[in-house]
Length: 218
Image 1: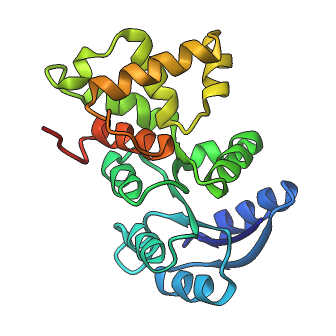
Image 2: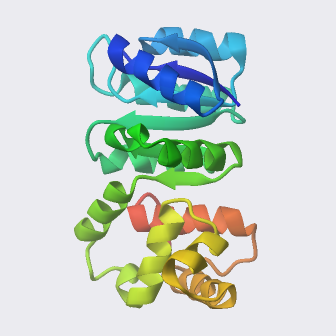
């Protein structure tokens, strides 16, 4: 796997390079701002761009903007956005662009297993949301909306879908059969109005987008 890394902190950049090296992942470029990130991606065409949200010059959302621009220009490039804080709007903007994206808190990437798992799922076209972001979203949702029709178990399943877990992983975590997980997911799709036949991976993304409030369906 080939990665371009962007973070304005030299210390964090070097730390991430070492972590990725331990995982057997090649960092083809490590840069400190959005413009350098765009140039590095154009030059190296990595499998994944790992990007800090806040970078020079304003330290607001330059990294996210650069990542979204890369995704529009080179849709096959995976994007893993890192943030120091839970900012749910960033997760929403990423997921609008489909699979192959992730949003993790920086504390999470110090755990090699979490980082490796996230990158593998992103390269495979999946989505990854930090569990803390998922928890925050559930707290903020208005219980009068369609998500209020989900059972507690269906909410658990949707939580794991939002984190990018496969049906097999969800079944293992919740001690369910894979068939039970599939039934729960079918029920979630029905309750969220996602019954039109389409690619299941696409419907999973739409389910999470509905949950994030990024789309409105009648």
